Image 1 (cartoon, rainbow, N blue to C red):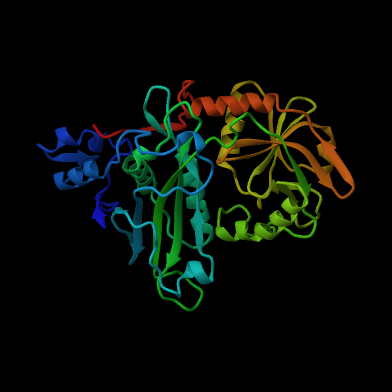
Image 2 (image 1 turned 60 degrees about the vertical axis):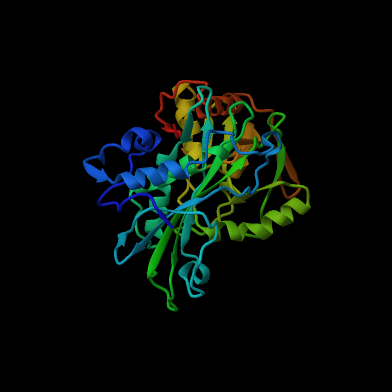
Length: 392
């Protein structure tokens, strides 16, 4: 492992990584971050680790889909003996775990998904990471795991981008560097309880535009044989079990011609919860942006951004319980998430009933606003983006 950053109590590189990007100038003098000295040898190591300018890797950028592409390294940190250790750069994209680790036997883990984009001005920006940190913090608390300090999260994300800068797709092709922070319990332990250690890691992969020829509507079906989450359970946590439980229902729906499935609440089967891996959003007959509210729904960071933008444009936003019977009055319906922002839903089938919806109009406007913010084509007045400095 290549040591890059000190412990949280010594504090790390500031999130903009200007001290790394200006490494050549920093080598001749002590570098300080928020009052703490950062040794020059770590600056050298950080500068050496960078993988070039955005788009500098020899990839077929136009053909990128949303799939795994190996990169140069990931960033890791370990919690042990009641504290977080240093951030390290790990070039082996595999974890070495005890066979008795909590994550394997008890599913004690959470993960996140966010993106970095090469923008119109040539700078690379991370999008909306503060909301991802907040959700991971809340999920860790619910599953009894240590809190990740925001500085640790932010610096790990930024350094993962900095180190793998050459894998950031160039501006103009609709691609991004997809970032996947994970936190899980590991170490030899047989009984259920707090793990001996916890590993936090940020890995990444370049991805292309989800829709290369415009937004395409998909058909959905209501799942009536399975529940996604229980009341007062972990439905609001981005943990592996929530997704594993959907693998079989999603495949059954796909086999019937429905690429996306919709879950109702498990208590009454009356209220809309969410799609398999995405929040439910709609525009009603009055032009309002409506989305379900429930303690068992995963709080989508994308949905929160869409609501912010909608409110700024004067669109009324309602986050509330939505009875399924209301769908007959919706003009537009979509699934929202990090991978695509919005997936238009053309119809929802429930039993013998098929409910059809129009093409995205108001939701398309919101979609375009988010995409423009992500790549710097519009001024970020919401404070959602953060520049990651490139190696000089």
